[in-house]
Image (cartoon, rainbow, N blue to C red; front, side, top):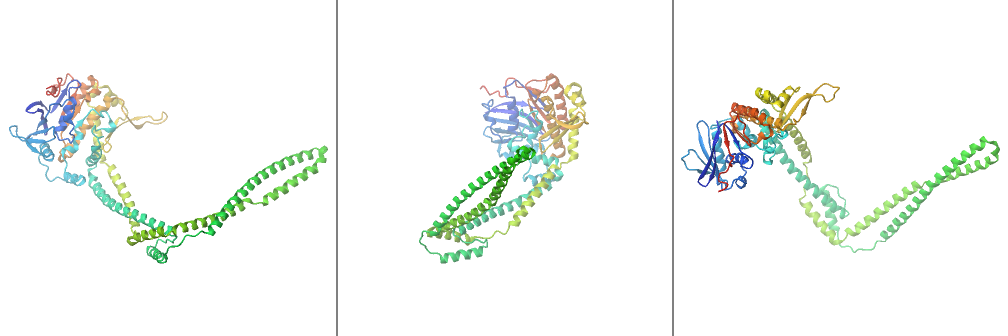
Length: 570
């Protein structure tokens, strides 16, 4: 089993060594370089991040080294501050300068010496178009301080841009292995279709651009554009043959039409005024008629005033006649006729102006030359149906890929969630840690891990409505200790799951946890830490726990109270 036996800090020829065991607890106060310890492990294992040598606390260090081994093989590795890589197989040998790729491959041989003709490996190579190295999976090996206790971003390195897409693909590979080849084939088909679609779409856009340019050119020359390129070519040629320089002349028609348009505009104003006055008059007449009819009714009811009846009735008849006359004057129809006539005249004015402008010899000649150049190489676009077909086909393939991606191995996931729950409810922890005891007593308490989204959902049964039965709900545990506890267990179980089921992927059996104990009360941590070490040992995982304090029940430890880098103050 792969193990890091020693971590070394080099200052030229001086070396500081830290011996590591299967379970190592590293502790020291703040600002002594605890986080640098974890970063040096990642650095010596080949991370592409080159910033470590420039960080505070790394002064005077010229290289970082390590001694790694399994039962049969030893390897001494070294990486200097210029990111040059070295290795040797025996302590007495001389370090060989090698490429990063060779360096990573030598470490991979310590993880798993022989891969052989492995189906999983071939599938991975087909899907990712690369051979897997342990570096692809190091997001499973380090729990940094950032995102600790974040169940919505379970892997603390999972939000790094370089990791987001890769982790999603890798998790699909691990938990959707039975569909991964089909997804890969469909993705390849989609990529090919998309290339063809992009090419045809570009041609279609270019065709449409040139077609519009031809259409505008014909309009500028006052030529009829049919869209039939052969016919339009003949039209342009005939126009060119008959085309000659014409002297501009004043258009009497234009003057007449302009005056007519102005006159009609004034007439429209007058009719509109009369229409508004007519509406007001009708309104007044209606009011007067209503009042007189009311007066008529009052007179009829009171015979004493009968002498006024005839006068009132006569006035009512007079108003009704005036209303009838007003109704005969249909201003709306008159206005519509005038507007129609004006639009016709304005159109003629526009045509004459356009003709006068376009018949400018130099501009027209230039337009003819442009159109001839475009039409000479212009080819009809005949693949419109193919573009639509590809568009629909690509939509369908994308949907099929999404469906396959979401169709995880339900059996494996359910088993994963149940094992995680059993780990969380560890008998010794449950007896001594109150929040674990409370969760055990919660109705329907359960975990649901979503590998694609790197999310752990916590569930329980509760009443959404006091008048209804309990239903399963998702909730976020309020305690940071709870969430961090769950997060660490996901890492341990995820490593075990991959090591057990995907050995050929050469995943490092290593978990480095930086400062996770800060979320816990020391009383609780005394029971949680042994739980973590127990599960690490059962899975064959080397555990390196870095902390500010040390519980009294921890024995395998390294103190860096005086500082991680002994050359710091040199």
